[in-house]
Length: 443
Image 1 (cartoon, one colour):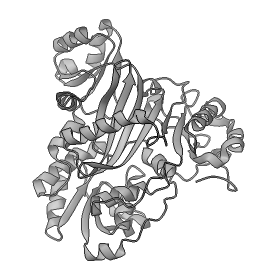
Image 2 (cartoon, helix red, strand yellow):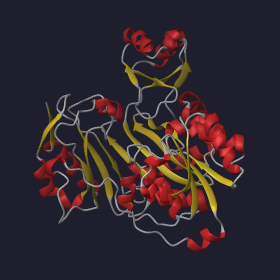
Image 3 (tube, helix red, strand yellow):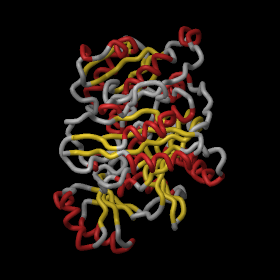
Image 4 (cartoon, one colour):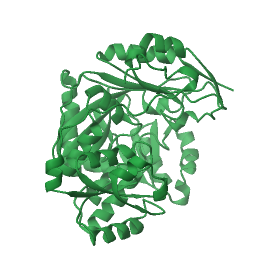
């Protein structure tokens, strides 16, 4: 969405539309009418882009039942139109509650798919699938994608290089592991997503304090990992029957752990449009294909974090769900597709319907307030709009008086700008200029 000729998203803290326009896909009315598919979607309301999964399922002809925590009366008109039925539960991660609703639904229709696209929801969905005989990602696969030590053990056994890792609740075992591999090490929850709740320990004298903060002395088991030096990125796919049908590579600048702990940095991640043109990505793609085989990922979105450095390419974490921080919006804008529709086509019809253009690189830059408090004003917004307006996808500049969020809250917690350009290097330069020019002033 170029912002030529329209109101600037930078004016008076205005937020531009956060949903890039999606091109219409081919009509599926005839096939949908002949073969209705009933899909249950966990939590169609939150976070905000969950509604796009509901929309896409509806668009490709599915009958969609939503199970969520909000009352039906709170659903907007579009969601009520896209959902054939909706059931409220108090907790969408409670297997008993969700299974009860699904078994009731199975007395009314044949539930063909049960889908969850949020990390915290995927295990509940997997357990209910297996209990109710619904095809989809298994409990084993979901466990391996959630439990970091078990995931790495399975990957290493198959010859896929990963950071050395253990899962333990024993401080002595953790100390022995750290001495063997050397500091720094990474401590995180066994089911962490990204850098959430992650700590870096640089020396032995700091270890006991970090383990105490995680509750290890009280018996909590954590993941302990080798710190991998190198550049960090991620490889995302939509796979059907284990075969990758769409794939994307993004790069972090700087690496996530540093980005989430340093206020003055305006971190970026950028989706490349050179995936088919640069042979260096062949190793990432081959490793991603092997990950699907080893972990048993069949028809699903995937998110795979990787590092490349002195020790070569290493995969770090695997998710059997879409990436966070709305990275899919960047993939949609850069490839001129409705990516949510492609996911829905995979789930409902077992095939893709659109071709990736690879025409643009696309990225996001997070803009941190200069202090904690409330937003006061912005410097440099008009200059950025003047210089780069046609390349801005959208932006979020919270208005004056908005409470700031802590640095570790993530890329979209405060202000941000998303941009695209046909040349990857030019886009990187533009995002750097945004970070140097557009400043968030707080009081």
